[in-house]
Image 1 (spheres, rainbow, N blue to C red):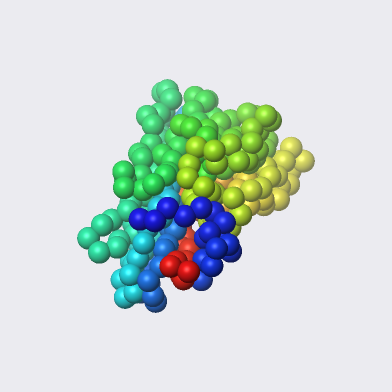
Image 2 (image 1 turned 90 degrees about the horizontal axis):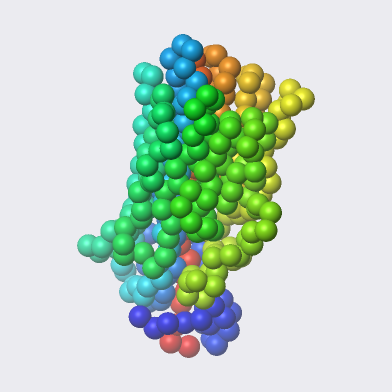
Amino acid sequence: MTILNFTDLYGGGGKYLAMQMPFFDSRAWPVPQDGIIIMRALGAGGGGSSGASGQNNQTGGYSGSWGCKALSVSKGTVITVEIGAGGVWVNNASAGGGNTVITIGTEQYIAAGGPNGKSGATGPLPNGPSPSGNWDYGAASVRPGWVGNIPTGGAGVDIFAQGNNATASIGGAGGGTMYSIGVGSSYGGGALPSGKSLFGMDGGIPEYLSLDGMGWGISFYGGRGGDTSDGSAGYAGPGGGGAFASSSSVINNGGYGGGGGASTAPNKAGGIGGLGAGGGAAATNSSGGRGGHGYAFIQFFTNIGG
């Protein structure tokens, strides 16, 4: 494959971006002419767990893993995208998130979904799965936080590839897309911790795979979830984790990539994870939150020979 720099692909040297396609559901796309694609896929998040009477040490679901790949494609090639479904809670048990799979010919590029949250957890959970090895770059599934005496929010997606469990959520807060600022039970996770760079990963990958700008077609940047200390909460910003919930009036779903918030109140469900993020855990007599569905984004570049 010809290695092109970022300027070549996005407007310089006679090469240009022909189209961008978000995939929120499964479908096939035939390549209209010879060119280059940059494709990204995000596995679905796992569902949050819930507890029996008097049992609060539940965890939210894991996030999905993600991968990014650049490669040449020929006119008429059919690219099939299968979007993983977020893990749901059914009959006192939560399910893991589905894989998001991009198939080109006989090659499959898999962004593994996140496992389900754990009920009655007694310690930190195992690490989550990694994407398949044929991506150019990616990040593993993130495990949810574990406290031991309170349900935890779902894990946020490690979209900036800051390392294992960089977005794990604890203390009832939902995980953000890079880090959880919420160590108590009030706030959802934020996207930018103190001293961290939003572009901290860019120096370690090829320039043409930069996650800057519209690399995903949606924004994973965003703030924390709402403060519940005054009895009300707003939606998390894109990328922010959902807030802790103690009543049905609290809105505790995660933004893009942000984990759903946990609920400690009986009969109150955990929050839904944002795209690829884990659902929040719940306490007694309730259901864990659904994990966020998977997602994919393909950019197509033509006139490569310029």
